[in-house]
Image 1 (cartoon, rainbow, N blue to C red):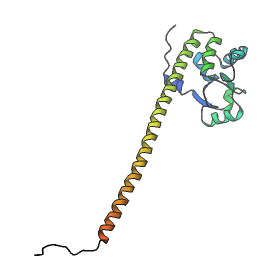
Image 2 (cartoon, rainbow, N blue to C red):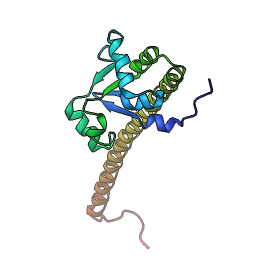
Image 3 (tube, rainbow, N blue to C red):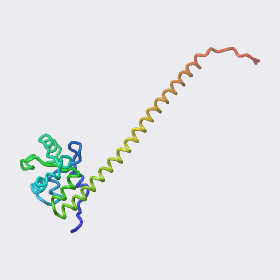
Image 4 (cartoon, rainbow, N blue to C red):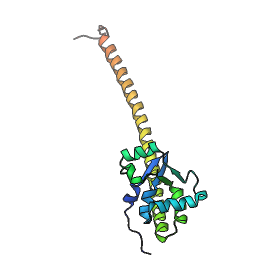
Length: 173
């Protein structure tokens, strides 16, 4: 079969964070696998033992409302009267074993690679963010130290101004 040519951005734009997990909607996966959404759900439900809660779960009404308000789902009517299922990275991998087609297998591999690259991107950004926070703490300490030095200088200047003029000892011209 030919290599699938879909830009990574299209797939990564279909990954959402729900219940603190990165997931994809069943309808988006069905579109990528080139199967009907109800066939994809049917395949998953027929093999439900392969999909524990951390692989696949059904959205509740509140989550659907949030997804509609964020334009992730065009409208509730587009769901066909049922609440969508979402699949985690592991669920997508398992789904390729259930939806038996070359396209599903290739797409699952591509999607998993995107999940991995997103995880690497997040980890890299987290380390950069931690380094920036460390630099901010150092700068704050430097600011405090500089303020302290200036306050000491101000005190010295005041003492210098307040000194009483003494008569000089020695030869006078």
